[in-house]
Image (cartoon, rainbow, N blue to C red; front, side, top):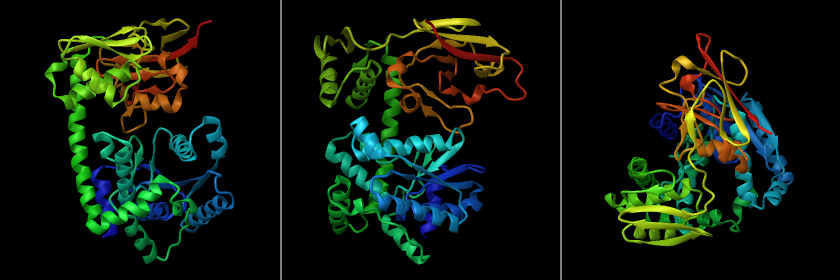
Length: 434
């Protein structure tokens, strides 16, 4: 029964394919121990290779070292390759001025991404119990439909095979095979918001409905479907409404649910601060003449279903030009050099390019399926993970008639990658101009 639920989740979301390289995030707690043992059991069925990654955050002193040693022994017992990374999270949190929890999470996912590389997948042990806690936390802090959808089963190269099982399922499974685990002492304290939800709110919900988790899972799937539909409608509408990076027209054609998402995309693209109240104000503004102040020296005007920005903002204007062989400039202090049949820089198979290659800067909603990956990534996410914030506005992009084929310091699209059969090869590299 338990294994069937996990298999159904894996199959429903296409999490695992033949010859995948999967790394299990292993903390030593019950959830992650269950995850790695289930994946070990399923590795023959799905024909994938398995290893584990443990991150010692050095937060709990001897207890953290105990967890690391437990993970080493567990992986040795089941013959699973293990990588251990030690990182001083308290020091990193002090330097970044973020909370320990947020800093630890950032470090974990950076380590996962680096360890997995371009071709690997990371499996995390999130359960339906975690998902319920996340949704309740989002509701308490304030959220829209997206926040009510909870933890995604698949995000880029991260998979969550246990997302439809409860924490009780896991503990029962480990007990049935006589497998121990470690307990993080911080999980027992109600000093943390998530723990208070786990220890106080969830038990009350289970008293009201003992089938709460099953009902919750069904509701989440419905919300995901509806959110996906509205998101796609808003993306399509934004492309139709957008007349340059600082102007949106035709907002009056759309219902408020779509209109507000269009406005939030408008804020994001133009690097403007916003919250729900500002979105509502701009939504109302689009129906009448007038203007409102959004940031220092920046106003948004509205008239007849259109909105536009006036004043100085930090947004970057749209820049683009057809790519030429040789030196290409769209930024003052950088050059992109394109050469044929050279082997240095990033390589593009010209015979796989569709139409004209355009050199440009970033556009809202840019996505790319990188070489060697079987999933499409948000460029925003890739930049946040790999490029310092001050350099992000000045990254070169190449696109053809089908979309992005190159992002500077990130990589090339899988569909134009060079193989042993490639004949016409384009080499691309960038240099600073002094």
